[in-house]
Length: 432
Image (tube, rainbow, N blue to C red; front, top):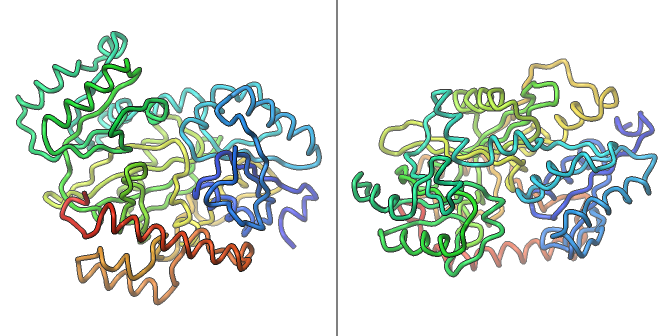
């Protein structure tokens, strides 16, 4: 008998937005506890299409905080006998919920940070400041601002940023990224990417000029490139409870990232591992920031020096979170233990929970993945992991395995393979 059944309080998990990270969490809750998965979105999203497991809750005004809050409160009133968990994996929605959580029905349980914590960690600038205080290495970065408020807070103007690049003599390529993902979501200009890869000063100047013309409200970061291809990247997922205890820590080596302009840098394949020093850095950061809820860190192992360089912390679980569940640390468990009280008591085993197995997570076909792995030793580790545990794919779930759904997921694999042929036809030393 499931724990949910023992409490006679069925649980609904309502995801906002419907990306693959939301589906992975919904799957984890259903697989572990039998929680009912639902998604609120404007349309049925790519990753929910033909699902017989996830119930769609249409909301045509997903860009309106007032509409979302009103719908959530109506939903709660319509389900008085359920425990309700609200979940999302979009920065904009995380911030919106943090800003409006006082208006939500208190029955909604939120494995998300509050507004103060969001502001402390979501800006890559403040992230770097906290890391510096803790002795955690981050890349050399120029904070570029486009308003008087940004300059008064320590950012430099576009002209001063270009001058600093010349004076410091940084070698290209350089990396460009927003300090705030939520603000980046709102701005649009020709040639915009999730992460910019600059090969020349002219390319930097073009983007800075576009942001300046739009009075971009937050900072844009121009960073040194830490050497090494994408297999030197690492993903780290954590959960810190409302009582201030880090109850989940997991990590993995990125094998391949996505390469379309809108998704560049998102891991498409991960080999799980336990980098204890990095996990300890993440725990110290979360404690210092007094952060609660899910967090996802990106860091890299320099191919030149071997040191860890932390880039950012996302105030959400991350699209690739199924690698954690697949490796033996179901991501629904820390939420249940934290937010559902005595209904799901925490285990007596050692905490934080950590994955128990080395597992291959991949949303790309295995043969395509191997084509991008140039290191023979790494190829062997990946092949061995597949032989032991198969390939963990969040959309391949037997409880949601109708024929139409299975064929659709296979078609998504082929579509993604075509995108690699278009945007990243062969591996490079930089991953670009």
